[in-house]
Image 1 (spheres, each protein chain N blue to C red):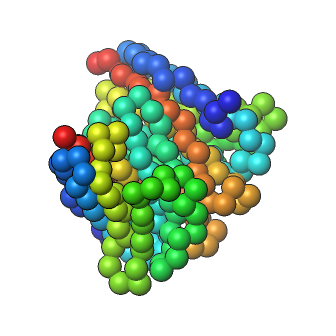
Image 2: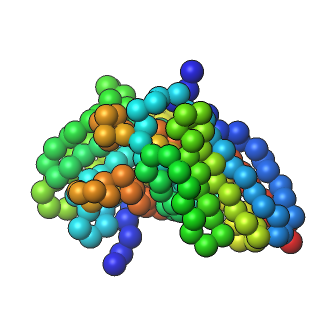
Length: 112
Length: 115
C-alpha cells in the first residue's frame, strides 16, 4: 500500500466551478500536510500547509485535514483558467526523519 | 530574495557518462532535498542534506548516485555511468531550520535525458 494515494484525474471543470481535490494516507504519524501546484515543466509551488487536523483558508483556497479518516482535501472556489495545473499533496512528520511523501498529483483543467 | 536555483535546466548525456546537477537553496535555507519525478508518477524522495552532512539518503540508489552539500557552494547530485532509466526530472527543494522546516520550496528542476 502506498503511503499517499491521490486520484490522478484528469479533472476538467468550467470556469467558476468549485474544485475538490483529495488525498488519503496510511501513516497516522503524519502531522504536516501540504498542497503544491505544478505547472507543466515547472517546479512544484507551495500553495498551503496545515498542521494536524482542521481547516485553513487562503483566498480562494481551503485546505482540510481529517486525521481520523486519514483524508485531506483542497477546495478551490471560483476556479480560473490560471488554476489549470497538477496539484500534489504532500505530508511529513517529526517522526519520519524529514522525509516527505507526495501523492502522484491530480491534473486539473479549468475551461473558460 | 531569489528562489531555489537549479542548473542546468536541461541535460543530455549518453549512456555511461556522468551527470552533475546543481542546486542553490534559497537564502537562509540550510536544508536541501533532492527528488526524482517520472511521467505519471509523483515526486520520489532521494536524499536530504544539511551543510556538509547527509542526513537521510534512504531514497537514493546505492550504486552510481551520490550527493553533497559543501560548506561553500551549491548542493550537487551526481549520477555516474548514466543509463536510460535515469532519464527524469530532478528537483531540488530547500527549507529552513526552525518551526517551519516543513515548508519546502522547489527549484525549476533539471530534465535529464540519457540517449
